[in-house]
Length: 205
Image (cartoon, rainbow, N blue to C red; front, side):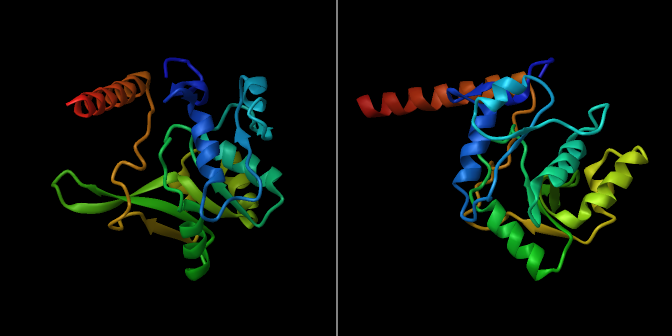
């Protein structure tokens, strides 16, 4: 985002992080507690009325740093993680991941979405920042980070992982589209404006 704080960027009139908070509250199986993982602009994030947890480890070790801090703070048997740059993620994530975790007796459950490989063949693509983790993984994650590891998929491959496919008929194909750059954010705004203009034109005819 060119140095901009991603979670505070505006989408559909509200900061991206607020979209994530609202969708977590609307889950079919809502989390008991919701918190924000952030390392700057902490007062701005606290204004949204939930706890804000900066990384415990120095050097900002990426999403896994947030995972580790969440596990240290949560005080619950499970921790659900979602990114702030995917404002339309499904409202069934927590429930579906929890069911898979229990059914497969897994250590963590991770979203997977239908994609196509370079040859056009269908495959499932893991979305590792959408993850439900058992609290017991805290020690394993700390050891991985201490050894210099930073990749979610590399660490999760060492655990019993359940991949949960979001490929049902009623799963929106763009539910996991992320706004990772300012250009993508502008394009999403432009698409929204064009859709609104089209609707207004249709209504006037």
